[in-house]
Amino acid sequence: MATKTFDLSDLYSEASIDTEIRVPKHAKYDFATAQPDPSSIPLKGLTDALASMLEKQGTDLAYYPDARGIPELRELIAGKLERDDGFKVSPDNIAVVNGSAEANFLVIKALINPGDTVIMEHYVYSGTLAQFRKVGADVVGTPMDDDSIIPEKLEALIERLTAEGRKPKVLYTIPEFQNPTGSTLPTERRKAILDICHRHHMALIEDECYTDLRYEGETQESFRSLDDSGIVTYVGSFSKILAPGLRLGYFVADDELLRRALSFRHTGTNHLTSLAVYEYLNREMYEHIDHINGLNRPKRDAALSSLGENFGGTGTTWTSPKGSLYLWVTFPEHVNATELMPIAFEAGVGFNSGASFAPNGDGDHCARICFGYETPEKVRDGIALLAEVMDREGSFKVSPGA
Image (cartoon, rainbow, N blue to C red; front, side, top):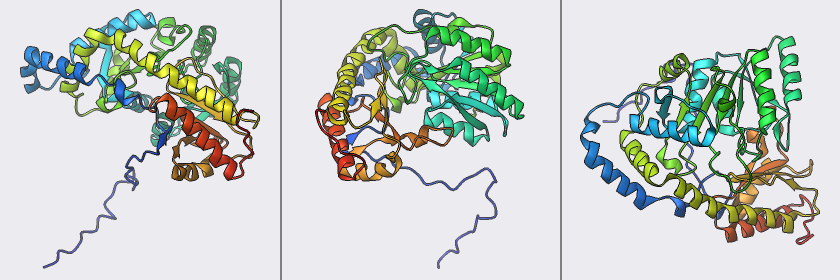
């Protein structure tokens, strides 16, 4: 006897949304996601580290861990932050969570009410943009140049929004190797931005999940190292130096904000993963970072070289990041990269249109090209194929070698 289907349509919560379940699809040349080189994942090192920690502490898996994560990993993070980012923090003010995405979302939910105004970069990571919008924030992008946020224009924007009755509450920024542009915010601008945020009573979320991926130049002073008043919440990740699939990140906040952010969690961070990551990084962190940067630098160089060879003379420009896994391409205004995406994917090239990174609704003529996943040879060939597709579609006449 057939069972009648139960109709849930009038029982769903107002907050729930019927969204399509996304199954990742990868083009032959995959420039769509800021993924690391699969060969860079230290599989044996993680396996050995986990085995070692299970021998030492395996029976602790019988207990639910500290809501902030295992103490050893938080102590390691505190030491890394002091060495690399120039500030001291108690492990008690560090929470290890399921990736920097969860870290950002917990802090967002602790700070933002529906209708609150938030400022982000003019182009900004689409995942965090979606998180702010999910909680009902009014998100506005602030002007940028090759050095990221322009302090004077940020303050002018704050003053305009305040006069409109939309006083901003939070500034969210990725200061080191900004996603998607790859730009780095100079220290002097960071100091000016901190002064602006203090004057206008705005909290600042500093997302530094790419800061270890530097191939040249000097790391700038972090916002958190420049100001320990509590205005800055610092977010970090292990996804980019190990593997996104580990889902392990963290945030640093003062006592009350940390407690309020963690109030939105109902389960802890994976204890087993934390043990493996702690022991591996305790043994080999900086050697591994040097190794992956050595792998990624030639890919960045291949991307820049291929863009010059295949897009030179077309009116296209691109950034030249000193680190990260991506760069930002700006096509002539008449090119619609959003419409081009499925055509290029069908031809074998995956990338993301700039529209998905645009709080202000622009960006159709821009694209983020992620070079970290493919080999240098495939990076070069994939960008050449993208130029062929755009030439064939009439976006512009590309003259290789121009």
